[in-house]
Length: 233
Image 1 (cartoon, rainbow, N blue to C red):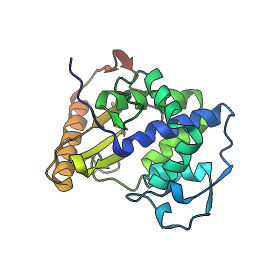
Image 2: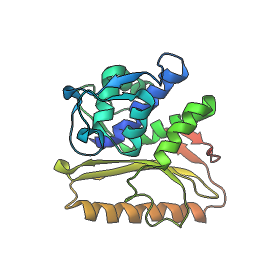
Image 3: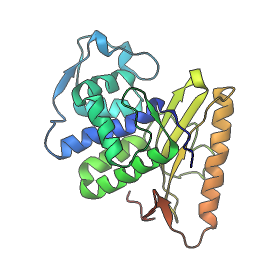
């Protein structure tokens, strides 16, 4: 089966922060340690730290929050310097990711679904760190793809990604359907505009939600393994 791959854009921040929280849970990293924002960390695009002064300091915990909630590129660069990009990529491969290029930021919908499933398992094993990451994902400021057409009050833990040069606009997440919670991984390529992509992804998201609503008994499968429909909060 041919696997379509995409520029991961900011969806890559999910495995980055997963790896960080694993290190914190294992006692290898102190989340209260402060890192210094230096000129080499600068990157435009999304985020709030790009507007701050070089030399500003932030705790690792703060940077994790900014990376997910605001999709902050500077925060992510600072954390990747600490963690090592190769270490994050190795974790992705160990979890079962098939599109893991150590020199390019590529992925596929299947792989991102696997990482989200691993996040749920991590939450069971390390509820403090897992719940915090899920909280960040639920409180992202970007809610223009998976959530808009879902019933009011539907909780979604998700992360968007944009790569306009390829017409790519993504959203991956966990939808807390009242009867059948599920993982959804939406990617696009060659979209004529961001607005067009958002509308299509919104419609797909609603179709999936309605399909889950119509199911009386189901078994979700990711990578050939059943996914327990009892997704923790």
